[in-house]
Image (cartoon, rainbow, N blue to C red; front, side):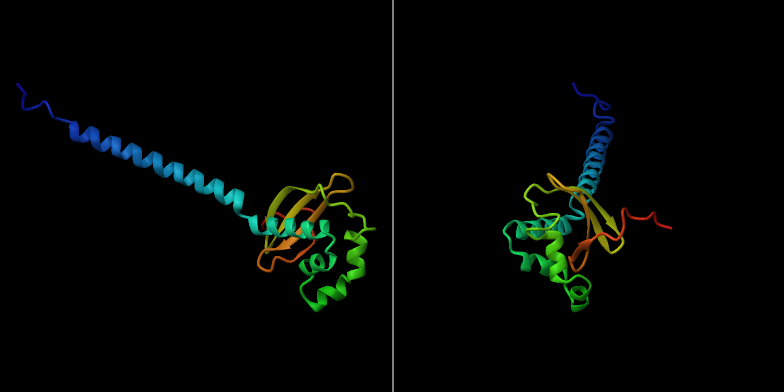
Length: 146
């Protein structure tokens, strides 16, 4: 025979289980969203640098140069001949086949990418966030915000 108080507190236990499930789900979503933001925040800029190195590997220096310079002022400051001295067949980074992006760091309007090569010196590249223009990083690291 079922008594009057047999079901007492059953609703509270159900409410607590729902609340715990909801809290665990929300915390999990926040952690996943944070990890996704951290991993993919500089994705476009990293992809642009990979595309740049793919063009260099295929010896399409003119197309790679177009990713490096976007305006006539850029061309005056870094002419094609200078580009070839750095990235061409006789340049200091003539073999980019085993490049590896080791670090990606947001800094103001751009991203600083540290790139290691199988041989040769590592390089820090700057990619403008909006234009995706590539260049040598003017900074060694991003200064601390003031």
